Length: 282
Image 1 (tube, one colour):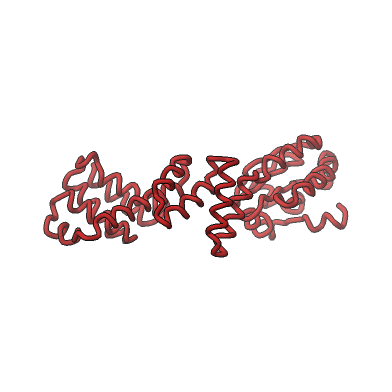
Image 2: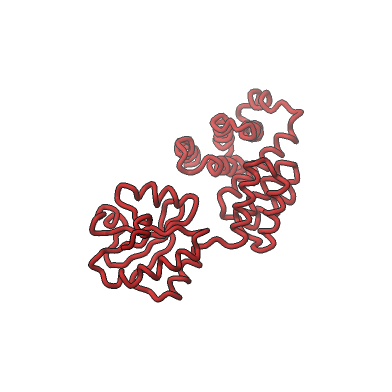
């Protein structure tokens, strides 16, 4: 390796920081190699040359598998050279062998963000700086290029929902139904709208006065969810299910599942109330 290549090196000790952490902000490509490997010596100059072309979007690192056996074993590197691309701490693409330069370049092209993705990322930076108008313009430009870009969809929908333009926001969110952020924002829009519609009603008193009424418990549960008091909301909604699990086509059960979406399936409260819901249903 040349002196310039030393800067690319990562080790077992630095891999977590120099690859996994850095991949949360930019894609990191790791070339797993060894000094005795002839194909590694063929690939090395090619991958470094191509990496320079994509330096704005992709970082290249190199790991000597003989000197860093723990990382090589962890990522099941069984033949050399092996090249793995990391994004958000996980492998998103890889290849083995000394590929010719056009194929290496094609590999890097799959990793570079699209124009729409770059615009969405720039919009996020503008929002962080308080420039929502500028961010909105960038999100719309991104969606002109890629109408279903999830970052742009959720980003623009969030801005629209914040200023009360919920109809357009909900229309955007329908473009990315599988995106968790979109699901959560859709639930939040519904809950905030529900709370606004019933602001003049005393739903708490109604639920306390009619503890066996699934409708009263459901309505108060939604109000609590709109206030982000999720534990109390889940208690009310599960009581609604307890008294009539089929009321309004299972509306209370569906609302419990919506709160699980908001909290995330790994949240301890979600796991706790999943068991409670199962006990009521079965």
